[in-house]
Image (tube, rainbow, N blue to C red; front, side, top):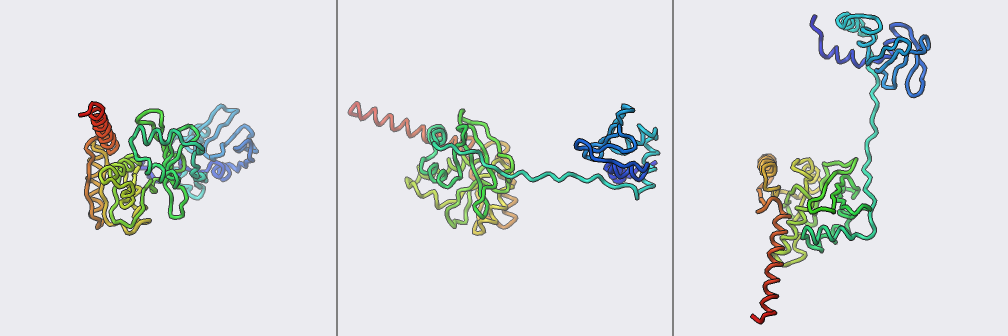
Length: 314
């Protein structure tokens, strides 16, 4: 016999309470978060109205198929025929609606010692950038000494938060429960139609620091806008464009590795087809923080050499 998969799916979701009431005239009362049969007190149905157990018989199962085959000794075929021929008794068990998880930002630490130590010393990011973002609540140190990067919506309400560990150079990272990845951490301070797009907030900040080094202007970075995707998915781009409609050009600055290169090329073509001016700027190293660390290391070496020459009177 051919069995329609939709019919099987519908039958498997049949409400056990409703089914047993119509088939056997059983009635149930709520009992310890589930249901107990009035006629057979040892017959229990869980609160999902699908799982059941008949204690006196030592038999349990999930759904009406198990009941018909285990309690009434029907074959699966006969059980299906019964249900297909009695569509009026089939009623889907009510699905529990999961309450949406609300984003709750991690508790903030009053004195942000690790924030500056990690970002400025270990990652080489300009302190002016860190201070600005910290003042805006876009990055802060939580009570465990780790960093929290935050993205906000149109009403300046937090919508996304990512935690990064500070106890190693390349710390762990996770997104806070309730985060909406359609909102991305961004550094937008002007009506510049160009936006640089990165995989991480650290890379966006590193790119900004490199601009300060290259221009010698500690405020020049506010003329360019930057967005972090928190990965290679472009889920945050549509919302960013909606919130910043003046954006006409996207420069993809993803990691210089296989996933980053593949994603950058895919996104460049996708948004070009949507009418945006697009291009790719790969870092020299794996990512822009690698480039920043290389530049700062070189400058320290040059400074040390100059100091050495000065002390020797060269």
